[in-house]
Image 1 (cartoon, one colour):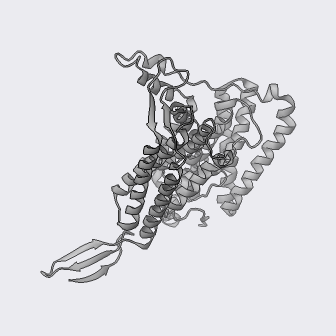
Image 2 (spheres, rainbow, N blue to C red):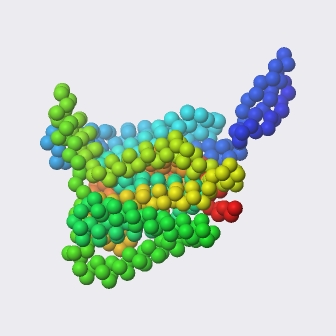
Image 3 (cartoon, rainbow, N blue to C red):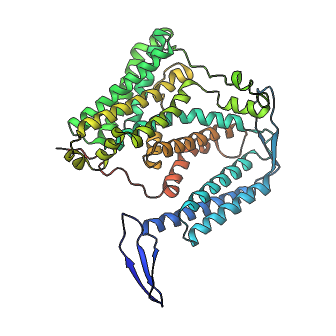
Length: 451
């Protein structure tokens, strides 16, 4: 049997042509160097995480309790009690087996996603079981899921802002600054008008104005877009800090006391469902999804962004401008106009994300209240491969890790509190290093187009 290597077709994996004894030619796809590196690095990472669980198992004692219902729920769901050591060891074995499988076997297709999901579940269950075992307090599952949704909301909106900009070829490092100015505007407008609606409108306008600044210097004056994003972030921090010291802080009762959104009580409708409306399970679901309007706006925004990018002519033009602006210009598309519209549309999402920090939560503004969420949203854009749905899932992952770190502090785990605060960022580094692999940005992302 002879073998020859066929060239790559459409960027896919190269193929080996095997000639059998009967003269039949059989094509078999080979594994590219990047895919092999990603597969092995993922296997090494999962193996190391499995070894970490094995190490944690030596300090696992007692039973882990997981409370499924909220502490103030009228009808309680049963509390799960898991034997600590067997569960941690089982999860460690699953991680080690999957890690070694990635190292030794060429795994591709849908099986990669399923094994990665199983590994993630094993890691989460094993780690939480170790943290809750023998602590005397149950781990509040309802609070964990509820907090995940809340923390992920501004990240989802910020990620959508970045996706709209970068799909059009404009790098947006200024998501943090856009959300910061929007949060300040929402607090001041909401405090002066006592209206949440006007506060959100003001935040959206502020986000669009900051996006216009980004578009002006990046598209019109061809400023380096990464440097421009850093400058806009510093400008936003300095501007809001100065106005806060000079205007807001001396008269907080007038300018920094905005009304806050109330969660929508779904139990008013779910209890009317015949047969299951008054069960504890339905009460758990209604508690979990009883969120503020901004949470539902974020969910709707993901669908809108996906529909715009992949089901409309405007979205096709945005993606074509980000991939090959010269070709788009050749067929009559106004490249700069499409980029302006995409950046300004992304500013709407940034404004909504900024409003969440004030009228969506505490109703007041503090210096640098966004605390780096814009940069985490930018990481979600890259890890989500510039896709609205995938980026939103990554934002939920960040929200889950952040809420878990907060929850673990109440369980008196032996893990230092400083490490718990670092946990979301460590998880980000791990995910970028091993789980995402090589990603490809839009071809002309960050490259100014000169006609």
